[in-house]
Length: 207
View 1 (tube, one colour):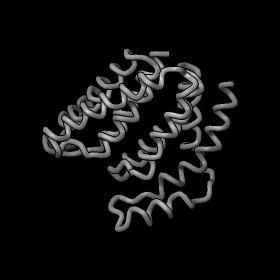
View 2 (cartoon, one colour; view 1 turned 45 degrees about the vertical axis):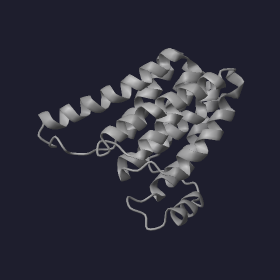
View 3 (cartoon, rainbow, N blue to C red; view 1 turned 180 degrees about the horizontal axis):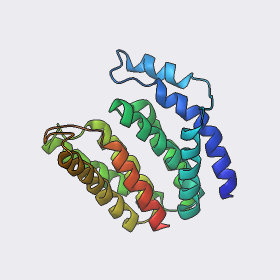
View 4 (cartoon, one colour; view 1 turned 60 degrees about the vertical axis):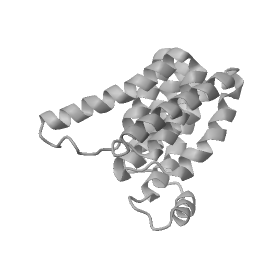
């Protein structure tokens, strides 16, 4: 099953790569941007690095956590690529991912726990955003709900690892920037990739 999932993810990466590239840093019209982005035709990169990373991550998560988490893996790679380039986590991807992810997790039998984890982690990040709105955006709060949904469905231990790992990795990166003098204390950087990396690690370790 895992090789088939890897192949499917590689093919899906040809679409998600052009989808991710279609989002801009400051769109004048988010609805028009979303329509334009989702109308993109799939095409493979030369070389197909994005497709290869999508396939590798999805295969690893499927092997360790199970087939229901394959969608989350593909979504995670796509959102990480967008946030890294534009410092945005588009609602056009995050919001529809809630019902899609819930449907894919339904066969696990732990959707109720996943929904509770989604609410808890989103509330935690909402509190962090309220205390320090300059440190993260509302997109991070919405992403936290997706991470909480996926990881809590796998178990409360993966949920806890994901919640802590994202913060730890982000802080580690910030310290590295300060040590190398590539940033100041008030420098902002995309936080979504670190949240997603922590979530993927939690799913793999939890599996």
